[in-house]
Length: 87
Image: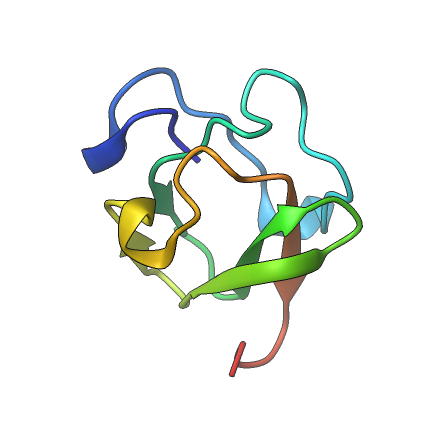
C-alpha cells in the first residue's frame, strides 16, 4: 500500500502469508492512496478497522493506482487477505 496515487511514496508492505491486519500501522493508516498485490491471493482494503465498512477488492497479482475512484483515498484502515475471490 502506498501513501500516494500511482504507487508513490514509501510503501507499507505486507506478505499475504502473514495474513490480515485488523488495524493498519500508523505509517499507512488512513493514508493509503494506491495498492499493489503481488500475491496469488486476493485482498480487501477497508475503510474501518476490524475489516468493516466500505472496501475495495485487489485481485490476484492486481493493483489499483488511485483509490480516489473507490472513495477510499486516505481512508485505509484494515486489510483482509483471502484465498478465494473477493466478489
